Length: 103
Image (cartoon, rainbow, N blue to C red; front, side, top):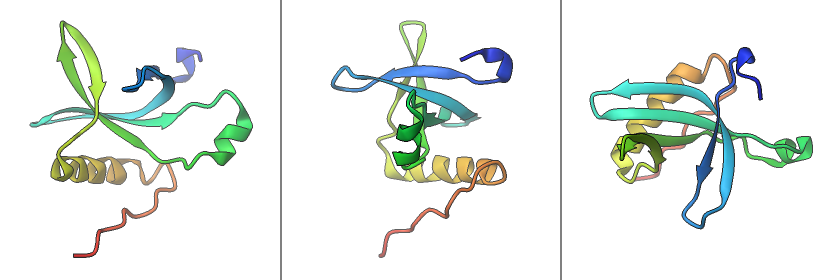
């Protein structure tokens, strides 16, 4: 896609070597690190309708001089970052409140 329209498309390779394309919808930097919120990119419009529309949130780490995206393993860190993205994006997208686990 053309960047003149503001779309940042990235390819993420999962643990099994499969490539997935995502659009970066937001990026933040906190005292703990850098993070991105991604939405899946579908080539077939029917796939978009079947998709769950859920944000993918990843940490950005530097490895060998290159930025790589990695999952956030710490649940507390993930919840904190997800809440920040939710607040920032709720005006642009219809975002449902995160479900809190029963204690």
